[in-house]
Image (tube, rainbow, N blue to C red; front, side):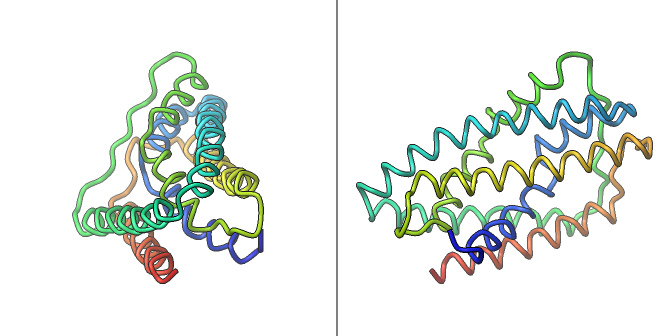
Length: 203
């Protein structure tokens, strides 16, 4: 794969990863009590869940792209629509006041619960099916390209969530993301997703 496609893919999925969602909220809830190790175990579980997604999708995308160029084109526009939908929700949320409350996580196995959070998260599967194909090219193995992009996505998830766990645990978070910080993150993320949708729509 060429470096430009890899960088564009990373720039597209990073705002999605940084936006508060089930994965991030679960990991933050594990670290909020000051237990960074629980946050790290939860992060490992989430990443393991996305490994399952990546293996399933890598095989599925290879079959789809090989047998149906028309379906692949339909997936491209599904990806555009999905990004626009997410961007509109983020921007609308950024315009609304209200802190994002966090609750300390209950006891249990953070890895197992993180794994199930990722495996059962429909956003993760939509990212794989709607966004990954836009950064794959016909001049190489479809399966290997899908696995490379999946590894980048999972690696970025790991880095972002590990940093989040460490920051929350070390600062003794009060249980809220400040309203200003939340709105800024969601507004910027929404803008980046709109740019990504435009880039994919342009082909």
